Image: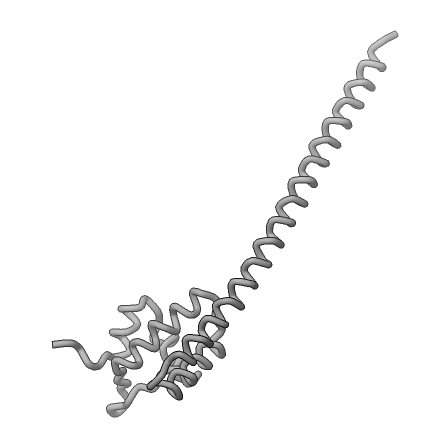
Amino acid sequence: MTKATWSINELSREFDITPRSIRFYEDEGLLFPTRRGQTRIYSKQDRVRLKLILRGKRLGFALAEIRELFVLYDATSQNNDKQLQAMIAKVHEKQAVLEQQLQDLKIVQEELRNAEIRCWNSMTESGRRKLEEELANETP
């Protein structure tokens, strides 16, 4: 028999996050547990949503973007082509941002290499001058 509900502690252990994080996602309107007294009871849908939230965060999505996708999914649960198209668009946006960041990092790397070379060259020249001065001071 497949499990139908989870406690906050079960989910926090399963996904290696704190109960506080799960409550935060609930406060943000991303999870909707039922309550039995003070105890939160999370459904299969909540568990799937939590898994998607964590995956989205790993991919660099903001919680607002994740919420947008959930809202879209909830509105189009019969035909999820609209949700998939929105997801593809968001993935393309993230890819473009990452590509720009990679280019920026390559430029910074090259600038750092050039700075290092200039420092080595400067040290070599100053070392050569110092040696020349020492030699000049030694000759009568």
